[in-house]
Amino acid sequence: MNFSTDNDILDLARPELRTLVPYTPGAYEPTCIRMNANESPYRALGDTTSRGLNIYPPPRPWELRDQLAEQYSVPAEQILVTRGSSEAIDVLIRGFCSARKEEIIICPPTFDMYRLYAGIQDVDATEIPLIRNADPRLDFALDTKTLINALNKRTKLVFICSPNNPTGRSTAASEIEAVCKAANGRALVILDEAYLEFSDKKSLQSLQERYEHVVCLRTLSKFVSLAGVRCGALIAIPKLIEFLGSVLPPYTFPTPSIELALKALSTDSLKISMERNTLLRTERARLAAELKSIPAVTKIWPSDANFLLIEVQNRKEFSEAARRSGILVRTFGEQKSLEQCVRITIGRPEDNDFLLEALSMLGHNKISVRERKSLDDQ
Image (cartoon, rainbow, N blue to C red):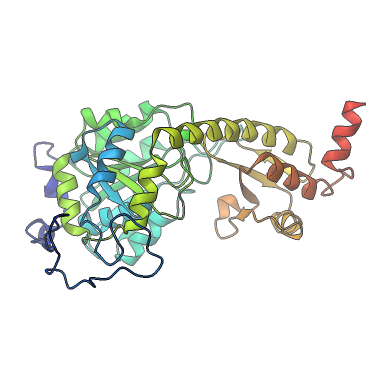
């Protein structure tokens, strides 16, 4: 079926939202007394923020937006700050998918929030499973041809996570561009790059120079250690940002989060984050090598993220061995393709040593990591 590529990108959005008049919050001017927003005139005890928690945060965190635009090398008008990339996923589905009428496409195993937010909106999530291969280096590849053939009039959003969670695999730029070409004028392509900083691959934001329907998602949760702040960035052409901003309520990003995120994006903080990132990548390689010596581990997939996906003989036994030592790992028993898989987040060197110690008694390996290192030194 042929689709026109000449239409306005907003023609893909829900028609009832295109003319929605956004809420207009009370004006804020630092030199004026605010008697227009029904706020308390008094600060709360213990409030050490610059702006004051008795005052609403800005409707949109403009200063933080500008810093994120600099971080991701895009114009500020192409950034929408969200509460983590999860809120970006939510607002995209709400903005473009009508309940019981339209669909998104996802490629499992992948980030499960795509499916969840679609379900909340009563939107179908069509699954195009990743291609399996006995070779871990080729496993979990994007099924590009099947995905393209699945595009139809109901499809509004295609989600591709690269590096993918939980597999850790990056998708080749050529494969993603093929999807972008096929979806042009038909659906938005959402490139979730939450784990990009842990990869040698470049961001695919450059695709936006050729395809206005491409949206990129980024997050500060991993790279700058701000998972508890919940700061994400949706990167798209200005008219998409303006539209999604009208769907997203004002005041969603709280004052302490703004101030903490700004500090994390300072030159000194980013330098530390890059040093830690280098260490985590080194530890990722070391942990993968060490896990090979544990008989209970049957497969280790290459990873471009801050985690490793491994296959084990018995996921319950494996996770319980870690839990007895006070370590939590992630299992995916509800997903058949990952039934005996475990995802391990890369920790500090001492955390990784502790995990290896906890796992050293699994299978036939009866000596601890520290004992093995001592024997090697001898």
